Image (cartoon, rainbow, N blue to C red; front, side, top):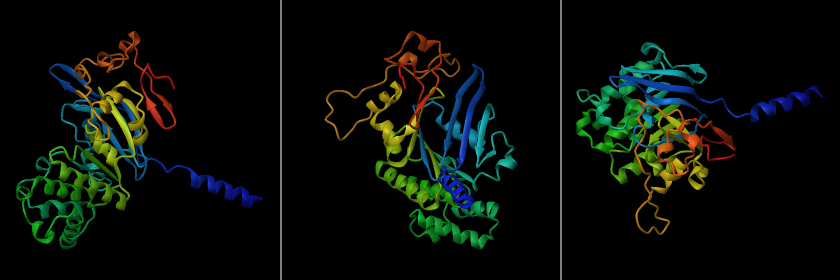
Length: 337
């Protein structure tokens, strides 16, 4: 009988969901400016499971990139972050640079929007790639070079053994982005951040880069957080979606269900403004009236209220509390779960 009880407990434990690799609770990012304190991210909470891909979407200025910058410890000097960010259960928010360096590149890496601002133009690609391995993996230079060439080949850089000795300006935009991906994945990080990784690329190269991130993350078991304003990119890569507006989460949940049946008026507006090839569209595309909110004067209520077609009087003064059901969350007075 004891064995049966033990087996049942073991089965229940094995059936439990894996611990989140990333847990963010009440993250707030603020910047001191001449115009006052600007709140770019306001009490954002989310978690990421091992091997999962999450897309954070929203208009420019919604705070998407600042979430990643806060986690990586890369905020501008006038920026501060508060709340909690745990990587594999360990608090990393607010760590000194020397302590955070143990995680950056090894446990978590980032692909930036413009590789030319991230790659050092004065150093050969070989130097920039091997430095990651010698620093975080303790490899000798010859071994690091072999690994770097292998990774460049995995991201489809032709003649990698020769081209690794070139400078960044000698690569095309798409090839530079592939170099950035190879650098981010060299140490097989558990967590990969991608900040608008395809914005500066043409459509054909965009598709290739997205397929590459998806393939490499899948084979390495890496979790992905993708920041973008392009919902089509999210649909092709992500398991879950977080919709951000005015630094706050408006809606989150499984990508397929949100695309099929959005709850929040802002999410509906974003999806409605996308051209679709599977529908006959007549006239103009839907547009969301108005402008994004001023982060220097955050609203005490819903930040989307001035632009919302479903707004109620209380939306201006009362902040909607998040409601959850079936793995989805929404913050809207109009929605009843």
